Image 1 (cartoon, helix red, strand yellow):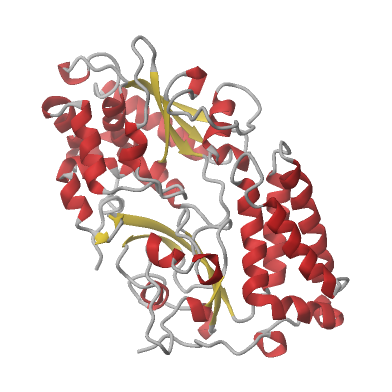
Image 2 (cartoon, helix red, strand yellow; image 1 turned 30 degrees about the vertical axis):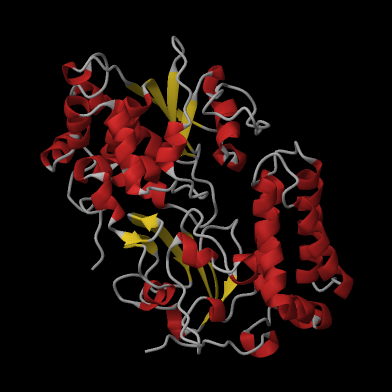
Amino acid sequence: MGRKLLLDKAHIEGIRHYDVYRREGGYRSVEKALKTMSPEAVTEEVKKSGLRGRGGAGFPTGMKWSFLAKPEGVPRYLVVNADESEPGTFKDRYLMEFIPHLLIEGMITASYALGSNTSYIYIRGEYWWVKEILEVAVQEARNAGWLGKNILGSGFDCDIFVQPGAGAYICGEETALIESLEGKRGNPRIKPPFPAVKGLWGCPTVVNNVETIAAVVPIVNDGGDEYAKIGVGKSTGTKLISACGNLNKPGVYEIEMNISVEEFIYSDEYCGGIANGKRLKACIPGGSSVPILPANLLLKTAKGETRMMNYESLSDGGFATGSMMGSGGFIVMDEDQCVVKHTYTLARFYRHESCGQCSPCREGTGWMEKILLNIENGKGKMSDIDLLWDIQRKIEGNTICPLGDAAAWPVAAAIRHFRDEFEWHVTNPSDALKGNYGLANYAKPLEVAVPTA
């Protein structure tokens, strides 16, 4: 059984409320930080822990904190990105809904380290019931003296506010989030300047994801060195995974990043195997924006190679043979799933969510959606496959924010690994329209059909 640092007490009845959370050891990291540590010492522990941002990019958190400008007389801000809009990702919702004080505790400790007296939780607009849970928890913390003036007599002031968005995926990008928080349209900013220098209201700002800030609590409680002992290499600590798709046991799992993809999918401790006794066809390991991988690049191969559930292993080989840990949205597809259909669904999502600032993204996502729809509906041509490849190549790396890359990568990976499936749709339009797209119809035999012993 893997060690749990964030969800170890999530099952306790009433843990959502302050009295139970405090009884179970809550807010110890705030006491330790404010009574025995300097702000710089807290940041140093986060650096030693090796914690990487859990929102998708995987950038070292302590390093990001150290970039924060600290001009005299200018406020600094911590903003928690709770705009969890990546398809296939729902781990942050779980944390906020069932153990909200863990996030609040992490925010107070992080705010102390950053010198932020006012901090914000920017939450996805569709999470309205979660917003209400967070607001109750914030008020409980305020009533108990953990928020407000001169916390624990330390001289440190801190308050937290919950701000809902309006349901725009683009606001998951940190500068678009800041624009929205300021009351403007959520368009990404050109960088530099980066938020650490000029962020919210023109002041130095750190934007971190919910899981990242929650992880500050065990890091301060147990020490950065102890946290770094968990996991492997540069993938330290535990990681929350949102597992969904054709699985026997979908849900949110906390893993140590030294287990294999095969173990995660097939072991009873985690996902319990593919539903209905089907074979694994493919998986999107890190949320909808990362490249899809076929089964033979996920499970143990005849050469004995094993793909692990961590940042380095999932990206090993680049996009030719690898993917990304991303936001931890683990989407599993069985042998009966149509990659063309699912790629079209993702393209439609990214076309809808593009803010329209950059012409490669604004125009390119629409073109990809139309071409994929034609192929899926039996109206495609062989030349359309190469056209799709050309369009995604001209979107990637040519936009202000990563949404263009997020739209391009799924299309590129689908063609790279499942080109035969696209060709089958072109040559068998009537079968494609009827939905006869099982493995027996078009796909090359899977190199790995069942898990190895």
